[in-house]
Image 1: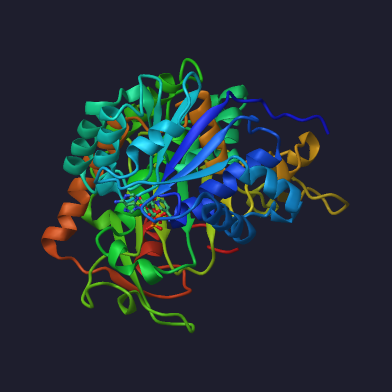
Image 2: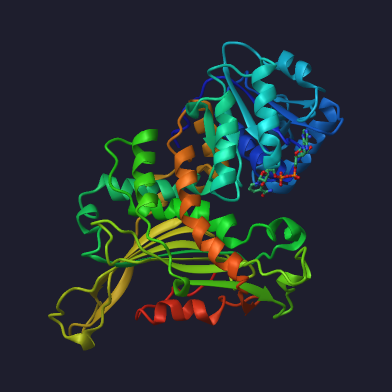
Amino acid sequence: MVSRVIPVDTFDLVIFGGTGDLARRKILPGLFRRYSAGQMPEAAQVIGAARSEMSVNEYRAMVREALMEFSDKAEQGEEVIAGFLQHIDYQQVDAQGDDGWEALREKLRDGIVRAFYFSVAPFLFGDIAERLKTRGLADADSRIVVEKPFGRDLQTARALNATLATYFEEGQIYRIDHYLGKETVQNLMAVRFGNILFEPLWNAQFIDHVQITVAETVGVGGRGSYYDKSGAMRDMVQNHLMQLLCLIAMEPPARFEPDAVRDEKLKVIRALEPVLANEVVRGQYEAANGEDGYLDHAGDPRSITESFIALKVRIANWRWQSTPFYLRTGKRLRARMSEIVVRFREPPHSIFGEEAGGRANEMTIRLQPDEGMDLRVTIKEPGPGGMRLVDVPLDMTFADALGPDAEEVPDAYERLIMDVIRGNQTLFMRGDEVEAAWAWTDPIIAGWEEGKTKPAKYDSGSSGPEAALELLHRDGRRWREIRA
Ligand code: NAD
């Protein structure tokens, strides 16, 4: 197969929090995959920076273990892993003190791309940004990558934006949302804007509604006390589901360029209508089907934090007036499944009669477990017996036909890290987008926090609270079943 890997410039990448969970599960395995694919330049350097005292060799041993555990490329063998580890260095630093900063600075090289990944708790973002700038580690070309959560409401997000803006230009700040790095999400944009077929139909006249579901089987487990201060709205809707909604709903940008795309997404967020109290369903899982309950792990045994949320979202603009977007996400649900369903309206008249069958077209964009995209179309059921209609999915992934094979498709994190090195911000959130999203979610959250509204209970391993089903039933619609 011809390699499609496009080389990137040589870089120094510092991972603050290089010993943490995210670095071990996603960032380092992602970089390893890029190395295996031949995309990592020979002179590239990845420096783990964290609080622990550790030699370079000890850190490399930790990275090796992480690759064994979290990388499907680990079977590539000792030689490849050893080659990757040659790119890895380590520096102990204290994000809030003086230790390690000078030594870290000395490891950085001039004249190449320099990126700093903040894979640490957000309260450290300001301390690190300040030290990078005042101690001469970052210059006008350096980039910083910032993890979620980006604030917990509008006020904290604004404060964080202001802090980062003290030391870095907006063009240097990469706010990561790994949902945007998924292959299928980009395919969605290619399909929408690269064809004449869909865009003319992509509006309220032809689309009945859109569903976005992100269902997880995991519970909050050990993260209970962190999650308890967050909840599904802050943890998932304000960022990931909102970003997906924007990509479906936005107007065609003039060019596929960072600010053109982000301007259009921002317009969508600003056009969201306030959500009515009876159009939000919050849930909290309880022990069932051999699984634990939310309150078994929450910091507060009377916690009213939601582990599930479903809501009906309306976009007040010409394109989407009268086409609702239903969003739903939750933990401890029946299956792990993330998908977007675009349901078109039924044909205005059936020449075959109602009994012939056939339903409305549906486009499904699956993000997990298997990324892919299909369009359900109605055709004649083959064979004799008259005109009977049947729905078949038209596969729009075409990975088999086009290659590269699934192995070679970069995971979201690795793709986004390479975008940072290339200096491409298209798939990263701009500060004003994040603030606009909080401005929309804040009043919804305030409503239930003030009223101390309790979430509805749902069984672990179920599809969520009954009321979430009702949210669509009363509009004469149904959720897609949550299944693996
Ligand atoms: P973690 O607790 O596993 O790791 C924290 C890291 O920060 C460690 O390497 C630690 O040494 C370092 N650190 C802590 N205090 C420090 C200090 N004073 N100076 C220098 N280093 C210090 O955390 P994590 O799960 O890896 O999460 C990191 C960030 O990524 C958080 O903002 C989190 O919200 C975000 N995030 C994590 C996940 C995930 O799956 N783990 C997913 C999305 C976002």
